[in-house]
Length: 389
Image (cartoon, rainbow, N blue to C red; front, side):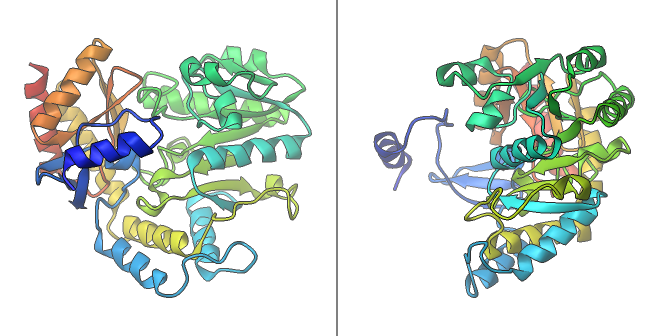
């Protein structure tokens, strides 16, 4: 099928909840993708921070192919070697004494965190940060500070509060005896690649203060690492830059290299509150998904892709020559002056053979595969400088 045929079929039968690029992708290899017309693009989106190993990575292809010949799905009524191994690997990488709950997306991982926080503390209120994004399900939407997403679906889950991101005094003032958990993103991905403070050092101090405040008040600290986890910032999880451990960490996106997976990691102290039947997911942690997760993480570690993310991320920031550029590892944002400018730049870059994404309406978001080279990153930045002229 050519692009026009695909587009017509999509518009007739697919629910229109996405703003699509005017092209259909047909294949990919490494950091590149090709559309149905044969045009080649450098992919700086990676499925929105999801294709950690790029496209068609041999290790991931092999793992999925071999597992599909054995078992694809068995439900969680049975033990699974892949699930047990992946749980151990993630718990070890987290630096926490933890247990893992497997699901299929970041929103689901956050839903689990909400439920677990309420049960463990016996409290009801969830506090989140301004400009936050935790998902579009009814629970996660209630702690997502995006009015355009919330308004059509009100009333939302009650007993939630939003405090200014990075304002420690406001957070301290908002915590009450009814507060179960504080949800925080160390870097807001959908919010425009923003940290709670201007510098990493100040952010580290803020995160440590939040950790201490939660300890003092019996509130759980939940770190949303859906977009920042799995090696993207140069550490396996972004909070590891701060020398703290959350009570719960949620992740998804890059954990299985593009195969759908969400994970909630719960400290042993907190996880002990959960009993059989308290939560579940039919497809969560399937043998196939966990095979993909194992292959992805093993490759990230073996090929030192966290170090590569740190190195290439610094190169991008240095080469950008944009005072508005910021980020950590391979999650980088560059401000533009308006929504219209951002969209025009996205269009220009597509014409130049580079795919970029826009977050928070006017921020260029660069979240390429962790395998990207300096040379490939240089291609992106050369074209972006030209597009900005």
